[in-house]
Length: 367
Image (cartoon, rainbow, N blue to C red; front, side, top):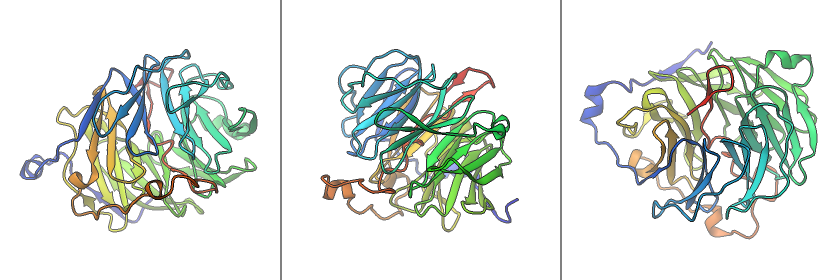
């Protein structure tokens, strides 16, 4: 158990009403949004839906770009973006993985291997591999070029205790993968498939989101009312951020020491990861619909979340937390010709820009 914890009462109406509420920059409305991801240009968001269509949105204008992208395979549950920002991997309800370019053209080869819905995807920082997880069965690590499976994590007897994969994330160095499951977290060697740390006992019912700190020394997770912080080497819990309701998704700002958490009853809170204190103004939804996905844009200027409200809400981080300094110019804005060529150089939030599936313990996916 953690020796220290933080708590914020998001339901304290008196406090909430006395504070100025920021206004979202845009709301991208579409039925049954199940996942979304920021592109590396910091201008566009790509979203998936339960009907299987994919849409591209403009963060500057708030408008839909072109027609929806369509293909077979059922609902789109999860995305991961390649380190060079050119390819989107897409996990479907039928367990398949598709690859698209950012203009809506799909590669002909479709990867299979999972027997149930796709629940998690993460692209290695080198761009050479993609890890995928499903509601049952092992984690597959494939070559990004042809989909060939190199490793199956948890395919031994140990797998019987994992009960499916709820979340995945490559470390920035690319040598480790964290996986979230029912009440447990595992950390694997991504090159050999060896289990390095775990099971890390998480007191929550399911670990619906995992994210590495920028130096890989810590692992953040979402389960029940807590965002937990673990030492990534020993698995020791270092801290927990407590909320009034269950949280489903966490994300770390690429430019500030800021953790974003969203969840049940519209919970939406920023935290200072050093002081462990809440940051900024309330930015939960007035309708208090469940929120299942949160992410920052690569340059740290935007934050977006989505859930049961059938829209993606886009915020300027400076409007939520004006006390934060403006992010410095992104390397994407300085030199876009020689990016992401080494391990640890890509956008680490590839697996966190998605709705965390809420299943009724079988196949039903709820957003």
